[in-house]
Amino acid sequence: MNTQQKLIDLLQDFDNAMLVTRSDRGELNARPMAVAQLEDDGQIWFVTDIHSGKIADLMLDAEVAVTMQSSSKFVSLSGTAHAVDDRAKLDELWNESWKVWFPEGKASQSITLLRVEPARGEYWDNSGLTGVKYLLKAGKAYLQGERPETDASTNASVSL
Image (tube, rainbow, N blue to C red; front, side, top):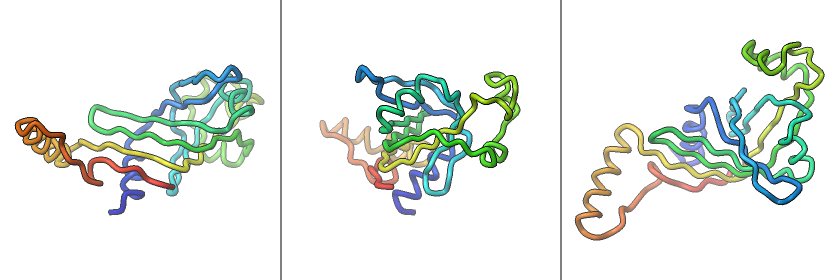
């Protein structure tokens, strides 16, 4: 499996992410987002309010970072994000639980899709057998006073 496919496969393990934007004052803003859909090429769809701070941030600077993590898997993406007004796509992705934020449902005038198009990504995977192998390498490196070596099964930077 190549590193790009490994990254995409790891992304599929996550339902939530932290979306990081830059404010009009240059400050970084991070907020949790539920993943609505992950495309085969790594694009991520979210749902948000068109009047939210993240949309205001994106109108000034479309560059974003997206991070995801569990206890043994970590992914970081950077790319661009844009609000997308596509009612057919919203119908396709609609999840009834979103009525908590949009009581009018899909008909809400404030609901919009947010598409992240990653350009680069990096992953760290210490799950399953990969994690066991890493622990053995780390233990050996510790005993030898060295740093553990990693390979693409554990960590890689990827262009998308």
